[in-house]
Amino acid sequence: MALNFINRRNKPLILSSKAIADAASWYCAFVLVALVLLTIFRDSSYQLPNHANFRDSQLLSRPCDEIYVVGEGETLHTISDKCGDPFIVENNPHIHDPDDVFPGLVIKITPSPHS
Image 1: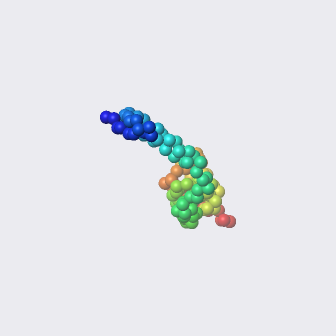
Image 2: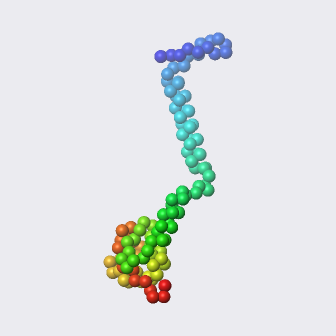
């Protein structure tokens, strides 16, 4: 199927469907490259939503009971600071690697008397 157009010199200009598809492909490629470049060079001062800060404040305000369940984003160091127990690993023999702490892990908290 061919489309006929009249150019400035009054001569018919024939565009095939293949030429139109080729032009559309180049247009789509250009738009895709532009979107990728915009994504790469967008403003780096993007702020995290307020609910992320709210979740962090919730973790810090949780009470420290004798039996403590580790929450998401917590480490033994943050739990130790929050609960005042510097000997969490020593008092929990099921913790073999202090770096292998995961949400849902149950630990025993024994706060030191001067905290």
